[in-house]
Structure formats: C-alpha cells, structure tokens
Length: 113
Length: 112
Image 1: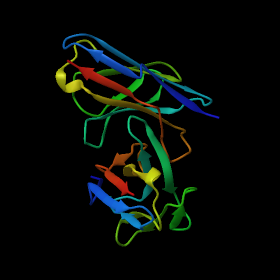
Image 2: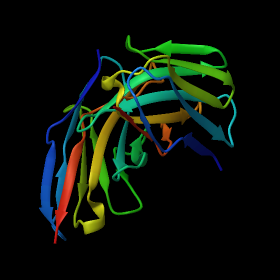
Image 3: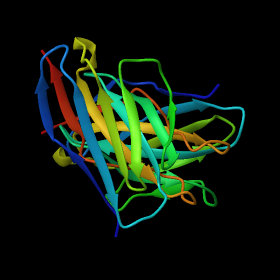
C-alpha cells in the first residue's frame, strides 16, 4: 500500500527566512508527485508537480521541490518566504497504476513578520 | 480553459436531514471526478471517484453516496446527515492523460 508522510504538522518561520517542508512517500510502483497549497476556506491549488524528466521542479512564486527516488522524498523549499505564503501545504502522490491521489496530512506554514 | 464549480459554498443542516452537494466542470470532456472530505485539522479523505457517467467507486463505507448523471456533473448525497458528516467537501477533476487533479472551491458543511 502507498502512503505519504509529511513530517511536520506546523512550521513557524520569520519573513524572508528560508523554509523546507518535508515529504516522504512509500510505494511499490513508480509515482507522480505533487504539492498543493490551501489558503483558509478555499480549495487546493496545484503548486508544482513532478511527472518525469528533471528531478528539480519549480513554481512561479519561488517554491521548488526535488524528487529523490533513493530517499523516496519530495521536499518543498523556498529561499525567502513572504507573509502571503502562510497557508496549508499538502504533498500528494499518484501511483502510476491508479488515478487516485494519496495525500499527506498537511503542513501549516506560519510566516511571522 | 477549464473551471470547476461547487455549490453551495456553505451549508448548515440539522442532524437527520438530507444532503445534496453539486459539482460541475466546464471546458473538458470525460473527466475523472472525485469527492474528498477534509475534517478540521486533518488531511483529505477520498470519498468517491468516477471515471464516467453512472460509474461510481466508493472508497470508504459511510453515510454518503455519489452519482454522476451527466459527464461533467458529480453529486454527493445523504438521506440522513450525522454530526460526523460535518467538514469541508472538495470536488476535483482530472483529465485522463494528465497527472494532476484540479480542485473546486469547496463546500463547508456544518451539521448541528
């Protein structure tokens, strides 16, 4: 069975500091990997994805994630966060043999001034 | 471009009352459709998914049911709501050839 673990439930950080949100997965088949962001009382928005090719993927707002197959990880990073990055972040995997997403429990990023 | 709608946005219902939440997708055809529930402080739980009209797969036994009467319409229902049905309900769609799912704005359901 597949699973996704987000190691930190809450990550407090000061504005303009770097941040890393950790995500590890377990799967017996190859996977596609995603990070979603959720602002309060809204749906999930796709932040970035890894389907194939370069293992380092970037979003338009400065986030990046690197697929590490040997460590089964897909950690999300940003070198300098803004107050507006405060949100819930979800890591998700889609095993290659199914159309279903498996989500982690989420990490709340709290950016303080 | 594709868009996904959910309504209502918020709903307060008494225990034992029926429920109907609607999700529609525009700008695509034959999407895979999904219903998730997000309880307070918890992750997303997949409730139902559908690969076509009339084709529904249930992920967990529960007090809810789903239907897909049209290609781009997905409905979540209950005959009698329980307190534990409270939560944030999210609909999502996926084009068959793509990997990611796109989510609707959600419905906040409070059962009193």
